[in-house]
Image 1 (cartoon, rainbow, N blue to C red):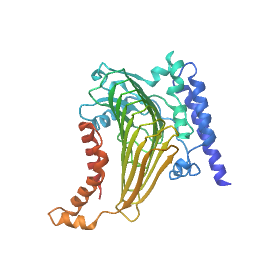
Image 2: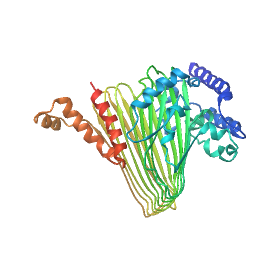
Image 3: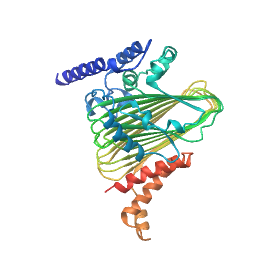
Image 4: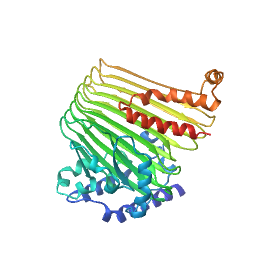
Length: 440
């Protein structure tokens, strides 16, 4: 009975949070009704829990218990703290776009450095214009996933980025999400559209400002990649040690296009990245890779679903996890081959490196093949560092710590090397090395 009452109390609290926030949420025309429907979808399911197959390893109902109140609009002091954090994680040559506590901060962003081929607007601006009538359903789309539906209901801001047909964006665009609050929640949602033959690289960084603690971040990005286009999307989550980060990506890729994905989680308390990628045009190629760097009691969950909807598509997934202390890493990879998707070529591999006796890795690779004439493979392994290799390196003058770092770097290097941009690859490598050097 206590569990039932606790669940009911949490649901009432979330109802109150949505009711109080509605006056602050942007949206003209049908947007308020779309938000209400999205919240109803969330309410029917509630916080994700182990009874949901996709969330069986990450029971948010047990791990966080409740949804925190919406963060206030950032004031001058919050913006000043966010400016410091955004500068610290700025990638070389990237154009920086900063979101603070769920709100776009143009004064902290490099809008003047945007190339003419790129059009950037805030989600708030778009939802409050007549264009919202035509785009609201897409911008605030929901799924059966309750975290995504809650994001649609509560999104305060985000970015709407479009690249027209045939344009190649030379500099990476870095979206920096900065949290400054204490025990609050933030919701951002961005939309990216690449026209036919367009090229772009997007880096998303999640960081706390000094003093930020106990917050919950729920982010989503929707991407439409046109025919013959190429998109690189990289996510690096380095939240506060007691924070929650839930990130979702919903992407559809057109014919003869190329999509490169990379995600890395290296701090926080609870992290979940979920990517839903539909290969919707023939001749599409997908490279999806990731690394979880887990220590202390961090719970890091990565779920990637690749839907081969049409024939002649190719997907490659490589995921690595390094787990220390009492950390837990989860990887769920699912490849779905539709009945019409003959000549599919798909590979999924996941490997975990356990650095302590208390470390835990849960790997769940899946294939669902509904077509003939396909080539699909998957595999999962876990183990510890090879003591013989550590001894070999120490015999050649390395300290034990440096020997272990070198072996771990080699272990995670393969998915990182799949990042096509040298600048972004260097950025990710530096973040990984910082985690490695900070290990006790």
